[in-house]
Image (cartoon, rainbow, N blue to C red):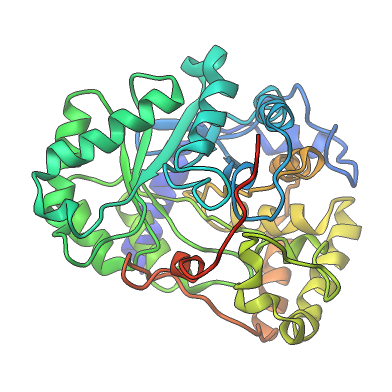
Length: 382
């Protein structure tokens, strides 16, 4: 533990030159909506490998998939650009986002078009899958083919952060790690990562080609990463990029038992969001609402501020298809919890039982995404 603590202090020191002073953040009055308080201010930066990213990124999936009916294309483009103007420079997408309601690559196209004029100042992360059949072919050519297709849709000649979306158990992780190292040397990607993995896979990959990031499920309701993943990543200077840091919207307080999950809405499959579990998990909401009231913030902002305070290598990427919610989430960077407030919140969180659990270890053979395979979705029209 002493070694981990030492690495934690080193990571904090390394990140300090990229961070805004806490006193600046606390001096910015944060409105409950979170949409105007920090616009125009410089958002705190953190490190993802050798990349400097805003402390809070933006998950872009919802414009193509995952939350039911999608907004019009122009709205999505404006939302991404407004996030950039607000101070966010870190955007997450994937080659597969959109295939249920549109087509594979739909989300990458949106992100690429929205950020084309500011590409040099934006950090774009995307992801690829490998099928069993692809695993039988030369891996370098196969992965590079995925990458080339993504770069074309993203309107770029490099990708900042390239994730293997889900490990395929029929394909050697070591071989994929070697390919990623080659792509880094060629300048086609600047860093790479894995998603929904435990320390065994992280360690195997990192020893071959150092990882920049691990994108796992993490929130106040899914804290499995705290056991081994965060300690290992802190020790090895790997960023943890939590997806669904607001527990699919539950921690915003906007999801109730009357909320209808339609179309390809992922939340119909989220364990914590069954009607029984929504009711059973209300004590958690009551707790963060109390802190939100004291801090003149929103429950979502308290949830994000908590993890930012807890781990210096944590860069959450909350997703939303609503402009107001997106800016509210980004505004969480200026909600500063004091050490005493954080310790008190941690103590109370530890007392609360969470109902429903998804976990962090998934492969292509055992993925949450497999729940869509037998679903018939009506393709959206743009």
